[in-house]
Amino acid sequence: MYSVTSVEDLQELNPFIIIGCGGGGEKFSNFTGIESVGFIDDSKKKQGQEFCNHIISSSLAEVVDNTDARSVAIMLPIGAEGSALKYAVQAIDLGLNVVCSFRSLSLDCNQSLLAFAQSKGVQIKEISSRLDVIRSIFGTAPESCTEILPKLDYKPETPVVFVGGTSQECGKRTTTRILGKTAQEMGLNAGVISTDEMGLEQPADLNFRAGSLSVMDVASAVMGSIKYLEEKKNPDIIFVEGQSSLTERGNPHPRGLSAAILVGAQPDATIVCHRFNHPYRQPVGIAEEIRAIEAVEPTKVVGISLNLRNFTNDKSSLFSQCQEKYGLPVADIYQGGVSILLDAIIQYTGIGDVEK
Image 1 (cartoon, rainbow, N blue to C red):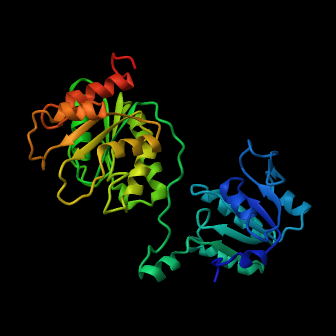
Image 2 (cartoon, helix red, strand yellow):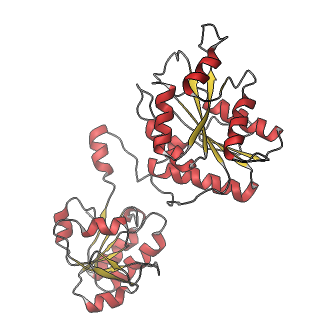
Image 3 (spheres, rainbow, N blue to C red):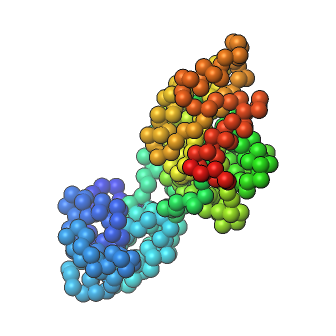
């Protein structure tokens, strides 16, 4: 079996050259009983710098010649599979054992490496995602790791508006769509990203089910979508639909999804949606959601979109009361309120002729 299940499995292969001078490489070197004798990284900015009491090198062969290493540990991120494969082949050819992370080089997808290692009389092992543990707990698990997207670090040039809410089914998709449609009617080149497979109505430019992705991939998917729209459409503003809520009770599972979309959107401004007397969700409240959103990301909630589907009381003073309570523009998106929210967004972001 080529899966690492304990630190003792690693200690038997000491000493190590570690490939990848980031979080994974540092974590590996900090394992109890691990002896690190060298570090390799392809980044020219890192080469020659000190890392974990060693000087980062660019040459595996050179470090092998100057140390007593028996093994290499390949701790590269998702997206660097090409480099990981190159180093694994080189290390095996040099007669070294190889330990890799599933993020770097899943051995399930590279069975030929197992045969190559066997032919050279060395071991190759993987620090796996341990889906076997999940399977033993629940009786089911994905066949392989679902974290597959490269990790982006992209800051949009276009003003981004995140449409969040206090619960599921509170009006986020509708508010996002109508904001985008009305912005286009005003002459703005607006982009709209729906993070749900139900985002089928125009003017959505992109729609995908963010909940189908690994939580580690959601932020990259949103950032990548924004980058794609900027390159293809050169928009004046981009609206991103959120999912669920950061604070909703009763169904905690999508709350992490909501946070990941928010982090990926990196919004300049945010609209919060709320549905009164929700028949099957448990929202905590508008104020709590605003505090949570502004704590997670350096964004500003600039308006509130009210869903009145289940509101049965007198509406005559509702909007003025909410505006006084929260200190924000408040509107019903179906009753002419879109202009109120768009005015708040435009004023805050400074798009068009309005200066922030």
